[in-house]
Length: 233
Image 1: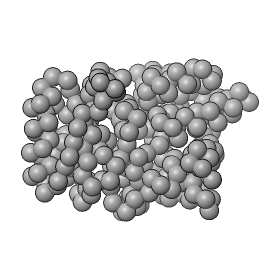
Image 2: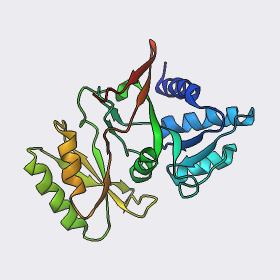
Image 3: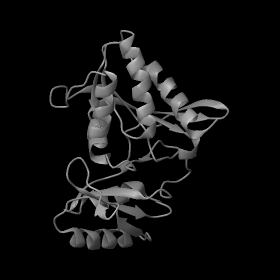
């Protein structure tokens, strides 16, 4: 199966967790978009859900396909969020943010009772870090923030190459008006320590390490669907 078909199959399996009346966080990215398309068919057939999108891009697709939306201010406690990931380790720690929506994705995930991650098997890794970690930063003091990130990762014994995410000749701008630094570590031995070090930098708004948030990963492969449940012990 081609990658698009695998994404569709993972999204289809995730639909089994969606129940009538749910308040649903709806993720961002190519796999999440396949979920939105399948969800819209169910909504058209009578499924009653209300969604909180994690990006303007997702909101536009939901509006186009007739998936009813609300805001996190109106529905601050969600039943379930279904979203993709850029990397998934055996403990269901994630790297997210390749689509640039990591801040809203993390806010929605934290507001949800459960998080289901949908992906194809290429996203499974033994250790996080091959995919560049997105770090959302404030425009103000960008160079100072870059220096602080360099110092923080060096203090953890990590080698890091990073660069400002661009769209053509212009910096990529998130829905929240921030910039993104993509930091390549190769391997992240202690994701919790890196998370804390980045959060301690004033110019860092958020980062793409999602730790302790995902409950289930639905992973599509040629051989079928694998469901991985987080072990919190």
